[in-house]
Amino acid sequence: MTWSEMRPLLEQASWDTFYMVGWSAAIAVAAGLPLGIVLVLTDRGGLLSNSLVNKVLGQIVNITRSMPFIILMVALLPFTKAVAGTTIGREGAIVPLAISAIPFFARLVETSVREVDGGLVEAVQSMGGSTWTVVRKVLVPESLPSLIAGATTTVVALIGYSAMAGAVGAGGLGDIATRYGYLRFETELMWITVAILAVVISLIQFAGDYAARSLHRRGRGSTAPRLRLLKASPSPKSAEPLTGGPAKTS
Amino acid sequence: MITTTGLTKVYRSRGREITALDGVDLHVGEGEVYGVIGQSGAGKSSLIRCVNLLERPTSGTVTVDGQDLTALAGRGPRAGKELRAARSRIGMVFQHFNLLSTRTVQDNVELPLEILGHSGRARSRKALELLDLVGLADKARAYPSQLSGGQKQRVGIARALAGDPKVLLSDEATSALDPETTRSILQLLRDLNRSLGLTVLLITHEMDVVKTVCDSAALMADGRIVESGTVSELLATPGSELAAALFPVSGDASDPGRTVVDVTFHGDAATRPVISQLSRTYNIDISILGAAMDTVGGRQIGRMRIELPGRFEENVVPIGFLREQGLQVEVADRAAPTVADRAAPAVADCAAPIVKEGAK
Image 1 (cartoon, chains in turn blue, brown):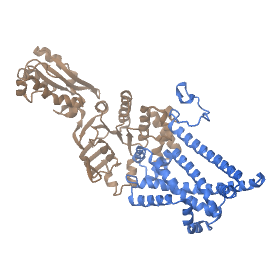
Image 2 (tube, rainbow over the protein chains, first blue to last red):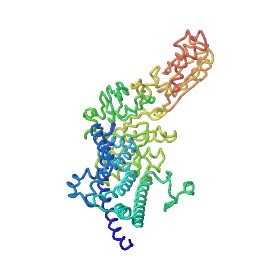
Image 3 (cartoon, each protein chain N blue to C red):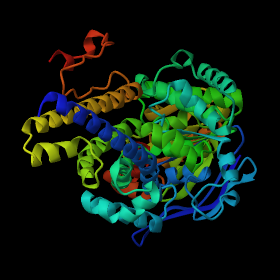
Image 4 (cartoon, each protein chain N blue to C red):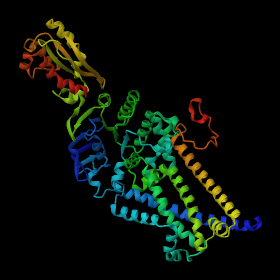
């Protein structure tokens, strides 16, 4: 296979992946965020403590998460048909991708929101804030860096799942790698696809980490020590006093 | 201003019942700084949380500024609109400040105003005004993490005042601060109490806090109020644990043949040189074993433990003189004079309970 043959394939596949992952991630965040918050609020001792609702939702989340994606996709066929009007192609893949990512993200949201200091909730209650105020002014803003990190993880996981969307003819990079690279022994194309995926995932992770960290920094102040795994990108405004940075000299 | 009657709070967890509050009757007058003191687990936190119904009392009523909050609470765990409106008129400051880390100082102070639905301009004007009041006008744009503990608590106080409350609840507000900062925060509370006519209910485990700012105090133990009253009332109460703890005196008799007397100074008597008068009038040598004096509300107040030569029987007249001067006098080991007569170590034993209270 020559590059001129590969190029249109790769372009189409990249676009398909972007389209599927973009939509399903948007749906997953839109639905997973409230679901995760409801899981926290209805938990025992929560603001809307309701063990029945909590257990039912928790079980639904667990069951959905325990299903292998390919099985889930088949099981959802009638639902997909009803929602998207088709069970094949990119639109047909978005529904199962979103459905599998919602509980995944919801659990991440639950963990993040649980980390928020209960004292802040109490403070807002003492000012006369309602539960909705607590969610809007405390739980979401205070856990935002962690929520962004969770959303990043969800997007990366969705890119992985989207490889299986080829089973319903949705295309995408993973599908190209399987069909051309693996089944037709186009090793070169397979590696190129893998390389593209690696770069894309690195970029998403980097962007997510950057966003989470800059929010975190704003909140916690510049004095808090940060764990630096990469030596890259020294902060442009690192004009801290000399006593500030023993960690930075490494 | 704040009245609780028969306030009871029982926590149930895994079939076990823990009574945190056991019929608490508290009355805080308007414009008063009222301190509730007690050890950890005495029920102080539950009490203050019941006052704005962050905790639902199991039974009893809470009335703040003439409004029965327990009647507003409804049955469910959620706070209804009326209760939330009532809460917004009660300020609260916390031990760990509870400031939102993602908001600037000014935005933190604006938060209660956002909840009240004030417009953006009115909010920022009020917030800056309050920050000025607590002496942090220059920190409006800073984030809480850039502030020291004392500054954070000032922001907490400014935030608590945003809704123009008549009542301020302080939940161990100075317990996470160093002594110097504690003093400045207490001074601020005192100033606000005077300038705004703010009624302050504070809970603490530090006697110093009560001594520094409180007009009245209550001692809690095992979910009950053991003693309560104004600081001078408490001092005037013979055998008051709180008075003994506020003004601890200790020291044992140097000889079994001598009399140890605790003298409590309050009111006008505190300013007169009674001890030297006593010494001169009866020509006796007085040794001071211990003393705790303080200025509360501009007046000298406190207790002193002195030793007079001779047994109690020989000192009836000098003790009478002290009583005549308007001082309250307790003879430390008179409760068991026979024991004192028998053996010296027993005297120390008798004095021990008073010493222990003082050490608390």
